[in-house]
Length: 298
Image (tube, rainbow, N blue to C red; front, side, top):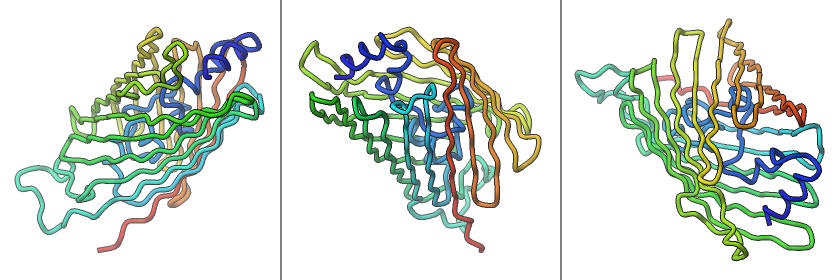
């Protein structure tokens, strides 16, 4: 069904319109502003949708809501929600001896973090609904995660199909608080959408690096490979001139798209906006709002 819709869309716009049906989708305006990088982002409830291992870096209850529009077309709207819930906390009275606290992860949730996500994309002709459950665990400088997602595709007059998609992810601090490596495998089971031509959900590999050049500058790179498409190279830059303000820029080589964005922190609330420009299709925009519960006072 996705292929039928993509053929129709290709005649009207281009193959780039079909990007939502390829791979894990796009979650959160922070990632969108950084060239759609997601495998190495931390401390972000939206990053957990593209790399469940990132859940392990969250120590407080977090909730997010977001909306996206592609190329100013109402039929290409996306709405999404996400939540992360830590399961217990490490006892502060029993630190790991001989290891710095930042490396030992003494504040990490004792039993890991659960993440819930839901997303809807499309309009009356074609739509996708995603409902996901993820789990992430942090052990020292390593974070591991797994995620299961129920994907439903609906095409007018042809009905709906549902498949279960499984994903794995990992992150590792090569240099604590400086250099992080992340990788994900989306649809490791190669879930099938239809018997016709063995249509399957794309299997996507992602691997990236995040380099904290200074307290204010974060540099990111990522390579994304759909097993049936060319590799996509992405790069992103996040600059924080003030603790409450973040400026972002990014690019994607496969779609030749430039992105930019801004993030504003107001207490426990963060508002992120991102815009992307495609040389053929034009402007895409995304807005997301996240809230994180304040840490409990000792």
